[in-house]
Each structure stands twice: as C-alpha cells, then as structure tokens.
Amino acid sequence: MSAIGSSQATGSNMSTGTPPAAIPHLAIDPFSIAFFDDPFPAHQALRDAAPVVYLDAWNVFGVARYAEVHAVLNDPATFCSSRGVGLSDFAKETPWRPPSLILEADPPAHTRTRTVLSKVLSPTVMKQLRQHFTAVADATIDGLLVRGSFDAIAELAEAYPLSVFPDALGLRPDGREHLLPYAGLVFNAFGPPNELRQNAIARSAPHQAYIAEQCQRENLAPGGFGACIHAFADTGDITDKEAPLLVRSLLSAGLDTTVYGIGAAVYCLARYPDQLARLRADPTLARNAFEEAIRFESPVQTFFRTTTRAVEIGGCQIGEGEKVLMFLGAANRDPRRWAEPDSYDITRKTSGHVGFGAGIHMCVGQLVARLEGEAVLVAIARKVASIAISGPVTRRYNNTLRGLETLPVTLTAA
Amino acid sequence: MPTIHFIHPDNCIENVEADIGNSAMRAALAHGLGGIVAECGGGAVCATCHVYVDETWLAKLKPVAADEDELLDGTASGRLPNSRLSCQIEMTAELDGLVLRLPQRQT
Image (tube, rainbow over all chains, first blue to last red; front, side, top):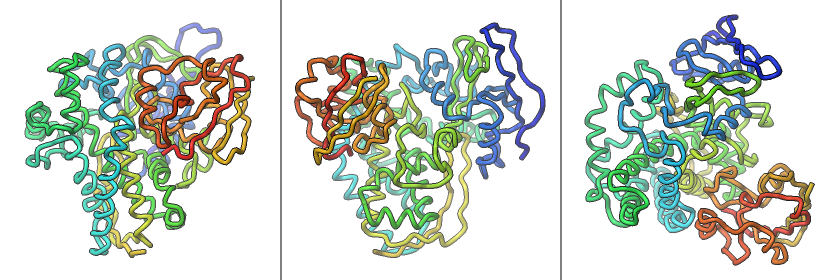
C-alpha cells in the first residue's frame, strides 16, 4: 500500500490573517482490504502528513490526529451528523434506510431523542443489570474452561453479548440470528460504495424485515430497554412513530460493537500475557483493561461528519458541504496525545480516548458495553490462568468495525 | 488560577490547579489525580467523576441540572445531599479553595 500518494495539494483563497496550510492529497483507501489487514502504517502516514488530509480515493477530507478528531467531535454545529455519518451525503443521496433519529440527527432534534436513550441506559439501570450480567459471564467462562480449546470470537465475544443483550432489550426468542448480520450491514453501509457495502445492502431485505418487526411495541417484552423506550411515547417525550426507530438504534449499535469490543479485549490478553498476569493479580483492573482494549483496537474505526459552513481546523480550510472522515483508531494511538500508544497497558489513564466517540454523540450505550466487558474480564481474571492462541487468527472485514473472524484459543484454569 | 483541594478517602489532601472555565474533572485528570475516573470524558453519561462537595462550598456552585441529577442516582458509592459530578463543576475565580471529597469507589 502506498503511504502518501501524490504531491498535489489543495489550497484556499479564503482570508483569515495567516494563509491556510496546504492540504496534502493521499492515495490511501481506508476502506480497502489491505488497509484493514494492517491499518497502523497508514494511520501514521495520515497523522504525520498534516492536521487535515484529502483522500483522493473517495474525495473526502480526513483527520487522524487526536486534537483534530476531538475538535470535530466536539463541534457538532459545524461538523453535523444529519447529513449522514457515513460517506453518503443525505443532502444529495437518498439514505439506504430511514435515518437514525439519534446518530444521524443534530440538535435540537437530537437532544430530545438522546435524553430518552440516556435514561433507558443510565447508570441506575446498569446497577440493576449488574448481578445478572456478572452471573452469566461467570457461567460462560466456567463452560469454556471445561472445553479448554474453542474459538473465542464465536464462543465468547459473540456468545456472551447474545446471551445477555437481546434479553435485556426484551426481544422475542425467534429471529435473533438476524441481529449480527443486520449490525454488520449497518456498519458496512457507513462506508463507500465498495463491494463490502454493495453486498451487504443486496442481502439486507430479510434482516431489515426482522428488525422493523422487532421494533414494534407488541414484540418487546415488558421491563426491557425496548419497552422502556416505547413508554416514553406515553409521556409525550417522543412520538409513537419515533419509538420503533429508537429501538432500531439499539439493535443497530448495541450488539455487534460489544462483540468486537470483547473480542478486542480477549485478543489483547491473549497476546500480552504480562497484562493478563496483572489483571489476575488485581481483578479490579478489569474495567480499565476493557477500556484500554477499546482505545488500543478501536472497534469502531471511523465516522464521517459533514461541514455546515466553511471552517478552519488545524490551520487548514475546509469548505461548506464537505465530508470529513474521522480516524478514531488513529487518534487513539496518536503519540501527540498518548505515551507509548502502541502498548496495551491495563493501568493506563484511558479517559479521553475516542473509541466511544466524544461530545454529544458519544456512544449512548457505553455503560452497557463497559458492563459486559467488565463482567467478562473479571470472570477471566478470577478463573483463567493463561490464554494461548492455538490456531490461525483471521480478520473479519467491515467498512467501519475492526475485529476478528476467528480467534482459536486454549485456556488453562487458575 | 483557582486551586481545588481534593480529599482522598484516607483523608490525604491533594491540591490541584484549575483553569478558569474548565471543569473540576478536567483539572483532576490533567493533574493525574487518582480517584476521578471520568470514563465518558465529560459527556455527562457515566457518573464516574463523583465527588462530595464540602458543605461550606455547596451553595457557591450552580444547581444540579436534570441530567446530572439522574446520573447521580447511579454512582458506585452512595449518593449524598452534597454529591456532584465534577465534570459539571465549572471553575471560576470565586471557587478558589474549593474542597471536594473523593468517594471510595467510582465504578
């Protein structure tokens, strides 16, 4: 893969006192298989080229340094979400599905829906779920220790969230096999019209039908997140038409992301046995060990914003109506922000990483993710002596999500 | 630059300089203070920057907003009448000398 593609540069005539810096054009395609296989050299090239780069592969601006990614995330009035957080500009193209009422919305509309989901997924609600989530994680690890050797993606990273999250949402037992394919579709669809996106959308009809059905009030068990969302329609906080779409947000973003997050954490502990040893010595580090895995692997690699006005960022000018790609994974390993960014350190002060985003759109389900991640890692800390990789590790390709297809491991009991 | 006196659960005091306009949480993180986790980085999502405000300072703070109020019900250490989230305490010159006690647990 070529790092910095051409010497061409985008200038600007806009007057701001000091002349704006030229924006380098790069030939990197961040949605290519070669990139997915090893994004780190490209991340470094993106960061080192300039605070803002232009990606000729898809005609978008890009930011990969922590400072600029953080700035874009925290200026939603300039870098909006309502024109889509993928490459597709909703002002110019019809979205592949009705836009999300929270992810693909701006204030003030966003504020209302965000408030509802924040209440449904609040710290208080997590306290009520903790005991059950912990018990299921303990039982999962006990069962895997009996088996000894297994695929940690299918049998742990997928199996555990599937055994707690759909029930917490209140989903029907039938049809759950659509959940992961639907989420994979959603995250592929944020990318450009490449093979990954086209294939995912071509096969999407049955998954979309299941999701639409499952979002309806009568199909959601009382007491679950889904029913709680619908209850906000009774109080007038949202309308009857909005409630199913907000349930859809949890089905889109609440499962696959935690699968990738737990997969990342297990992969880290398998590769860095010294960190597993520290975790075993002090299981209270479990929550931060999960958080550090989110920083280190950044399961959600990228999101786009669209400029609502001409703006200067990092000394570079971007015009109105431009797509800006934020490299969350590159920001999370930016040496300008992090000491020894390429080491997995479970005692690192992780606050400020952008693996869950930042600002008003920061992952509304982050507490569920952390609860799941912590429960699994506490169980590992208490019960597992070693995690050995015992077969070929293969990558799963997705336009937005970074993670593995297979991670064969052998566990030994503590 | 206003100073915040953080008191750890073992009564050890740590003094932290804060930038005016920044939150007490940011000042704590910039200082590398243990005891403030701030998982959400100030997004008012997580309730892991919980502090107990010294009674003499309580009235000098802006009142608790609705979203903060809701989050405080979910803190890991028990909520008290003087509980606040330090990400919602904006530092001003008048808050020089602010005393904040840290809870036993944040998660």
